Every structure is written in structure tokens, then in C-alpha cells.
Amino acid sequence: MSRTFVALPPWLAHAFRAQGGPVPWSAVARGALSAGPLLLVAVLADRTQLGVIAAIAAMLAGINDRPGSRRVSVKRIGVPALAGGGGLLVGTYGGQHLGAVALTLLLTCVGLVAGGISAVGPVASGAGTQLLVASAIGAGMPGPAPGWLRALAYLGGAGWLLALRLALPTPGATAGDFRFDGERDAVAAVYDAVADLLDAVGSAEAVGRRKALTAALDHAQDALSGPRLRRYASSAAERRLHAQYAAALPLAEAATALAWAGEAVGGRTSEGPRRLAAAVRKNTPTGPLPVPHRSAPALRALDDALLHAADAFDRGSAGDPPTRRRTAATVLRLVLGAGGREYGLRVALCFGASAAVAQYLQHARWYGQHSHWYWLPATAVFLVKPDLGPLVSRVLCRAAGTVLGALVFAGFAAVLPRPDGLILLVAVSGALIPVSTRHFAAQTAVVTVLVLALVMVGGEPQASLGRIGETLLACAIVLVVGHLPMPGQRGGGVRSRLAAAGAAAQAYLGHVLSEPPPSGLGGGLSDDRAVRWALRREAYRRLAEARTAIALAAAELPPLARHSEGADTVVATLERLVDATTACAVHLDDSGRLPPRDVRQLTALLDELRQQRSGVVLSGLPLAG
Image (cartoon, rainbow, N blue to C red):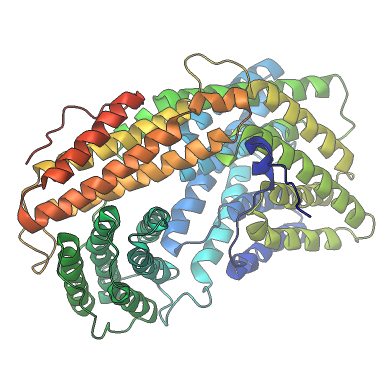
């Protein structure tokens, strides 16, 4: 008997998706040692309110404690914490010296700034989130401590978790070297991804494997960025790891060119990259590497890249991997561009409206003796930010997670001793945060339990029912604001990401077609080739960001999703253009000229982009060398 399955619409199906992967046990241990112990120390020192603030900061830092290297965690945890400390300072002094109307205007301006900043990228989004949450807490949470002391407590809470991240080892990821936590695995994963792509050449899986290679390169590039957290930054081990990453770039280029050609290669071809991956993980010599056939330009490029990798692994001498960093002007364009303006206006309106409604309910005595009006705008922050998921999915997950978390906490509150049992509950919730971040509803449930426990430790009564009511009210506000028309055209976030991807693809293509043929890999990386690889990395990274934004926009309700219709087609064409450009670069290295077939392919792709009217100007580029 056949069964008929009804496919859920994208806006509803997204709410049931969860990230996979192994349990991050090291992050779980850090979570258990962060908020709970901080709160215990503060209670014993009779500074409970400061302990609550420090625990909140540690909780938010735990949400940003994602897999990656130690050096990346400094930026990923530290930058949002600094923004949160500033927000707490502004909110505290605003709440002490401003009336309800002026305070609402102040919080609305903070929302405008935080929303625009959030359009820059994931770290900036985390900074915007903590700026908004901390400003609401500072404005609405009463207490005798001055604003500067509360801000220090906030920074201390986040700094404690960051210190744990830097000091505690990660089992299984060090390869006998405590200094490189996650970095070796990230670089080794690039070589594995190259091997996987070579195995898939000529099959339908090649496109997906190429995207996986892009993700691995992005992750490795991030893992090696940031401050070098050791006394001797130019150590031999550091230089060796950077050389191993840099040596993967020509291999990735050759593998992409082979995938674009679509002609299957022998199974032996992928053995070399896999041996290189094992050498990175174990920090051992490469040993002999199998040599692929040199019957085509891409295969010759692969052979040259393997020889260069073997030499780089032996010598371990290379500069920093080629990369292009965002300048201040680029960041400012993202903040003030279409995506940043739309993001900022919507966050500001939602944050300000939530603060106004909350203060009205407070003055109308809808709250009891203990006021938590700051919960409403703080809750709205996580609902209004588009990068956290589609609107309806966020609302459904937030509502379900809050109800579940409030009911679970009510059960624990009825039996746990105070404050010891509640402090233990805070510690357990902190340990669960790294696991719960895989699904927004689960994260909301854990955070709800932790926050309600902090409220009771601070001397206030059980507030599960109030938490549910305010969350549902915040959901209603965000649903209304999220569908309001805004100045300008909707879908600014998608368009800005698509424009950035188009500009990066244009820069890469223009450089390849004007680049003189390099002298070869044997003598090291030429400046032209390093620039080319940096441009290639930039193009693929911006394409990945555009795909993420398009996928989120496509899972919105139909009235919102229609504003990004056709964007996935444009980004797919841009990806093919970058793949074709990579193949052209390999051909130019091999013979110094482009075959007529490559010229025809580039011309057809550029014509296709113009017809799609994406708004990305890619015309005017030379198509003959």
C-alpha cells in the first residue's frame, strides 16, 4: 500500500530543520563552568545583581562559542561582548536619567545602529544582538550598581568564558600540539574536500562537492585568521601550518578546473590530497605522493600543485595565506547600503515599538510588583533579526521554545532549593547551550530556563507565566513589523549580497584575463598568482553568503519570498562563471592563451547574466587574451 506524503511549505518546513554533527563536549564543559560558577561566586560575595549580569553575558558568549580555532574565538566572542558592554552602559544611564518617551527614542536609535551593523556579517550580527539585548537590560533592570560597574561585570562574564576557551584544551583536535586547536583539522579538511571533488569529477555530485570545498576553504581561512595566541607568532609550526593551507589553494584550483571540464579522472588522482590531509592532521611528513597523468591542462596543474605541496610541507616556509580583508569603506557601504538600511529600519521600529509597549504596560500596572518590561524588547531582538532564520520560523520556534522552557522551569522551581538548586540549574543550562544552538526552539527553551532561574536567584518570584505572555506579545509585534512596507525595495539584504558576489566575480574574471602567465609553482607563489587566489577565495565566499541569504529569504511567507524570486538562478550562473574563470586561469597557466571553447563559454555566461537582469554589472570585460 502506497503512502502519500504532503510536502510542507518552505516557511513551515524550515521550523523543523536542525543542524547535525557531533556533540561539542569541550564547549559543553565550558558552558558548565561559566554562568553557574560566576553566579555562585557573586551570591557568596553578596553581589547577586552583578552576578546575574555576568551570568547573562556568559550565556550570550556561550551562544557565540561555536566550533573553530582559539584565535577565531577572540573575535567571535570578544567583539559582541564589547558591544554588549557598551549597550549596557548606554541603557543603564538612559534608564536612570530619561523619561519613557526619551528612553524609547534612545532605544530606537540603538536599534537603527545595531540593525545596520548586523548586515555586515556573522560577527557583526552577534555584536548587534548583544548591543540591543544589553541596552534593554540596562534600561529596564533596576539595581543600585552604577552603569560602569555593571558594564564591567558584563565584560567580566563574557571574558571568563573566553578565558576558558583559550585555556582549556579540545580533546582530539591538537595532534600533539596544544597551540593549534581546530586549525589543523580545518586545513586537513580542505585536502579531504579536494580529494572528494576529484572523486566526483564527471558525475552529478561534482557541483555539491565543489560547494563543500568552498565551505572547507572558508572555514580554514577563518581558523587561521585573527591574533596568533602565542609568544612567538613566527614559530616554525605556525609558518608550516600557513604553508600547508597556502599549498591547498592551487590544488583546489586544479580540482575545480577538472570538475568544470567534466571528464572523469582515475581513482588514483585523489590519493595525493588524502595523504596530504593525513600529514596535516598527524603533523607528519607526507611521504611519496602518487603522480596523476599529465594528459590535460588541469591534470598538469594538479601534478604541479602536488609537487608544490610536497615542497611546502617539507620546507614549511610561506607567508600568510593570500586573502582580501574588508576595508572600513566596504563595511560602511554594507551598513549604509540597501540591505543595511532595510535591516536597520526594521530592527529599530521593532525594538522601539516593543520598548514603548512594554513601558506602557508597566505604567498601566499590567506588571506586578516586580517589573520585567525589558524582557519584551530583548525578546523581540532575537525575533526581528533576519540572519537568525525566516520570520515565521523564528516566531514559531521562539513561541514553542518559550512555552516548553517556562513549563520545565516551573516544574524545577517547585522542587529545587533556593538558591543552591537554581544555581545548579543555571550551570546545567549553560552546559546545554552549545548543543541547543542547533535549533532555535531548543536554544530558546534552554535560555528561558536559564533566565528564569537568574530572575529567581535575584530575589524575584517565579515568572514563567509572565515570560510566556511577553514572548507571545513580542511574536505578534514582530510579525506585524516584519510585514510592514519600508522605504525602498524589499529584499535589500539579498540584493546587496548578490551585488557583492557579482562584483567579486567580476574582479576575479578581470584579473584572470589580464594576468600575465606565471613562471610556475616551483619557485614559490608569485604576486600575481597570490592575488588571483585571493580574488578567487573572495568570489566563492561572497557567493556562499549570497546563497545563504537567498535560502533564508525563500523560506519566508510567499508575500516576502516573492521579493527574492529568481535570485537563486542568478547566483547559480555566477557560480558557473567563477568555475569557468578558474578553468580559464589553468588554461592560461598551461599555454598562455584561451581555447575558443573557453571564450564561448564565458561569453554565453555573461550574456545569460545580462538577460537575468540581476542588477549586477558584469559587462565590458575583455574576452580575449
